[in-house]
Image 1 (cartoon, rainbow, N blue to C red):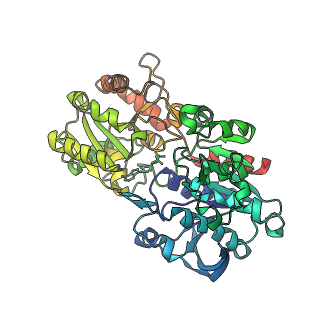
Image 2: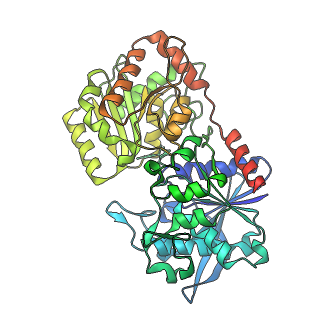
Image 3: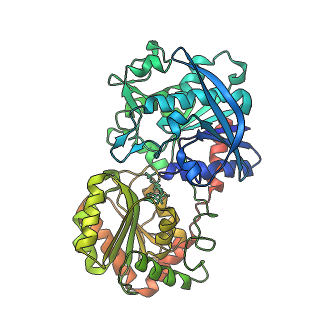
Length: 476
Ligand code: ADP
C-alpha cells in the first residue's frame, strides 16, 4: 500500500507535543513492514533551525483557491525509509512558531492550514497515487473534505480511503464563518450535518464527517469522547459514527527513548544494570540546582503548561509533596502557570527546579534521572511520557484517565504486580494520596526494585500498534 501521513508536526523536523513523536515513528514502522510510507508537513522555520535541508522536488506547483492562482514549492527529504515532503510557502510557514506565539494563535491559521490541505492535493500528481490518506488533528481536517467534495471524479483519487486520527478533541480548529467561501467550501456544507459548529467553521468536524474512519490514540479515550465530559461538543457526531471509530494506542520509538542508547544522558544504563541511573539522578539534580539525596525521590513533570495536564493540582499540594520529595518541571505554555512555577522555584530553592522552555535534551535527562514521573491530567488521549518513563525505570504516577489508565496498572505491594500508581478523582487529596503511596514503596528498597523490574519489562514498541493501523487501512 501507499500511505500518506498528513500532520502539522513531525519529529525530528518540528515538534510541539506528542503528535510529532507519533507521526515521526509510525510511518517508519509501516515502511519497515514493506509499505510505501510518506509524510507531508509545512516547511516551518523550525525545520531549518533543527538543521534539516530538504531538496527541491517540484518548483512552483499551482493551485486555485478563492478564485486566485497560488504557487508553492514541494521539497523532499528521505529519512529512515520514509519520504518526507514539505510544503514551502514562506508567507504562511516561515515564522518563529508553528501555530501561534505565547500571546495567542496566528490570526490566519484558517488560511495557513486551508492552503496546506489544498497544497497536499495539488502535490499528488507529483508524489504519486495514494491508497490511504492518514490525516492527523484539525490542521489536516480539510483534506478529506476536499477529496470528497472536489476530487470525486478525479482518477488520481478514485477509491482512496481516508483515516482521520484525533490526538486531542479539545483543539478543533474553529474559525469565523466568513472564511468559508475563501477556502472554497460550499455553503451547502455549512450546516449541522456538515462543517458548522455553533455558527463557526470547524476543521475537526470536516475531518470527522468526510473521512472513511476515525481513530483516537487509545481505546480508553475512544470511549470517553462519546460522552459530553470529553467529547468537547462533538460527542453526538462521534456517537453517530461509532461503528467507524477505533482506538489504537500510541507506541514508543525505542531507538530514541531508551536509556541504553540515549545520547542526551550522562550515563547509559539498561535493565540488567541500573547503576547509571544514579549518575543520571545526580546530573538531573545539578541541572535543576536541587540538593542530591539518594533517599529522597525526585518527582518530574514534562508538560505543556495547560490546565488539561492537571498542573493546578500540583501547585495546590506542592508544600505537601516537598515533605518527602523534590520536584522538577520542564514546561512551556500558559503565561499564568509559567509565572506560578517560576515563583515556586524561588520559594522552595533547592527543592523545586523549574525550566520554562521547550528543551528536548533536558527532557531525556529528566526521564533518566527522576525516580517518579507525574501525570495528573484532567484528560489524556494517550500520553507518551508515562510509557517513556517505564523504560527509564522512572515510576509513573498518573490519573486513571484515557491512555494513562490503559497503560498503567496500580502497583500492589502484596502481589508485586503493577507498573505505577494511579488515582481516580481530579482532586488534591487523590493526587497526594497516590504520591504518598509511591513514596512509601520508594522507601522500601526491595519492593521498589521489584516495581522497577515491572516497569522496565513493559513493551510499548510500535510493532503491535503499526499492525493494528495496517489492519485498519486494509479493512477500509
Ligand atoms: P501532548 O501531546 O498533549 O502535549 P503527550 O504526553 O502526548 O502530550 O506528548 C508530549 C510530548 O512533548 C512528549 O514527548 C514530551 O516529552 C514533549 N514535551 C512536552 N513539553 C516539553 C518541553 N517543554 N520540552 C521538551 N519536550 C516537551
